[in-house]
Length: 145
Picture 1 (cartoon, rainbow, N blue to C red):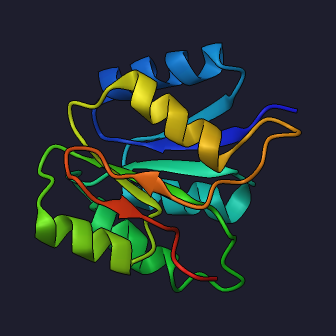
Picture 2 (cartoon, one colour):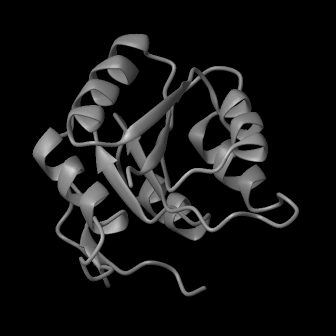
């Protein structure tokens, strides 16, 4: 069974390239051009993972994370945030708001694919307990449920 992934990024080329890579790996992908559209999709469809850009018009990734926390009967979906402006404040805020991983842009597709596999393992693979946040020398564990 393939994994359903929501890609939220205002850059169409970035979304399409990421979609192509993930679909090559057997995932089903849906694209959203901003956080507001992404939230609407989450309320109407089921996803196994969200890959979320931070700097977007209409609704930033941080705004998305904040609003996602207040969805009634919030789905338990891991969120990977990608950002071209990774620093300690962004990392801390994204983690506090529930992001499972934060990756700096430009990111390595191999690294992103490895994190996707950890968060959405194929049948028979164990669930991960921690993962590395790119561009920083720290390891994060998912927030407690």
